[in-house]
Image (cartoon, rainbow, N blue to C red):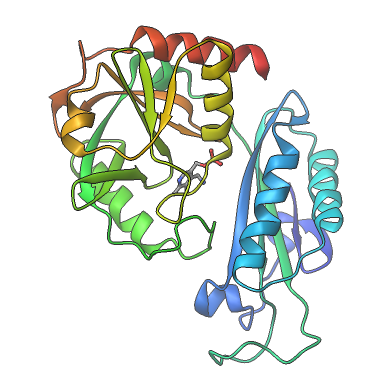
Length: 274
Ligand code: PMP
């Protein structure tokens, strides 16, 4: 397997990361994960734009065309037709100090790839979720390398026998630890508006488009945990999890406790588009 670090494509086991890379000390950088289906990078442009935007928000300048080229090369060199491709950009390599490096220090790109299959079982059978307090910072729209809260909360979900933790601020649902959250009530699709409390998922945006094309009304407005638990259908979305039904929240059944009709309709439309 070929990976990329700081200007070089190398066999995975030949990559060594510089310990002065600010990604190591501070998680000082941003990242993307894209899905490759049949050798094509899905929603490539949207991911590139979001990476540039995330970087800009933390004052890292990146060259979109350079990132595009690295990603295409990673895909072509590895020849994995169905894969998840990871790419991160850190602020650069300099001795540990909180202040930004001197001018001239270049951002550092790291990328690796893994073969992945579509999560067929989870998409058919659904998953369980638990709710947790969203104690993350207030810039969740940035796809930052800092994922400590997300990892702690995802592990708590697993320890409780669930797959995802659905987060809320004072009872208002924001998103999952690595997913956006949707609730369907009376035929209307609800999800948190795209603001600083959530990552504006590329899959989220894609699903909203699909819903509109299927004449399913969409309301991008925050809802409460109580509303979520009383929904007819709930699902989570992400690049690798696609549209995964949530069949229980805190062990309370959603609808009939199985994947719902509108969820299945959206899954079908998603599948047709990849
Ligand atoms: N929210 C969070 C916190 C995430 O980490 C992710 C996945 N990176 C998502 C939502 C879903 O985003 P996307 O659909 O772009 O994968």
